[in-house]
Image 1 (cartoon, protein in one colour):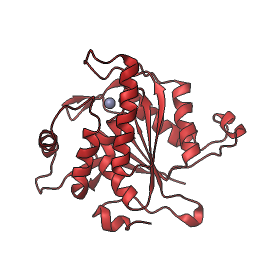
Image 2 (cartoon, helix red, strand yellow):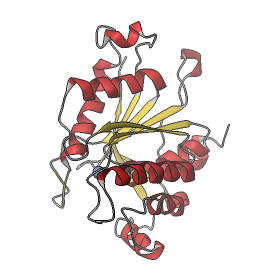
Image 3 (tube, helix red, strand yellow):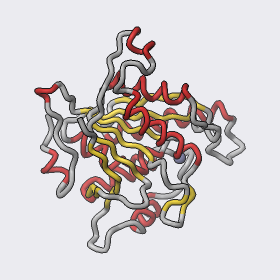
Image 4 (spheres, protein in one colour):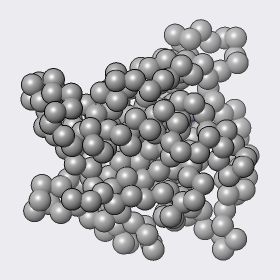
Length: 250
Ligand SMILES: [Zn+2]
């Protein structure tokens, strides 16, 4: 058991699971590519882990298109990115990483994508789920929200509600011994209108360490990475991860 959420998070933090209702101190971060979880939620993930929560990353695609370096084949790139994501998770105290193995750059909305994420939720039984906001095609009039990000986010939102919750969906999971599951809180990064700020100032260096673990993606030195994060720093000096928060009903 770590420090309380209030001690580590500052002003805004997730609610505490109600253990009397069987709710677990678990958070799942669903990301399209290796490194997306670290851009979107590494600070929040490490704060949760330090608070005694169990955090799991689920990476939807294999990252096989993410390099211009001719030294890589798709196979060696996938293998490198698996190792990089595991190393980043270890730096953050994220206890486990799952790789769903869909092809990078080719994600479409499908029953197999929805079923794979639903299965992960039913198996891990998280209290809170973090993922890409699927709604914006353009974020803040500045970035295109990658196709894989949109479909990963959309399938995750749908898996949270209603698919993982209802027993008639993917009944083969129940036949295998999994149970239905109600996620209580949903957090979306990359939102045009975020509603929830996590102050990650205390752990920003740990977030940079996690990002630098993705060596196939970032050749930058620590100082360059810091300057990049400084671009998003608040006028008051705080570093934030911003989300759209949905507290689920019922
Ligand atoms: Zn990505």
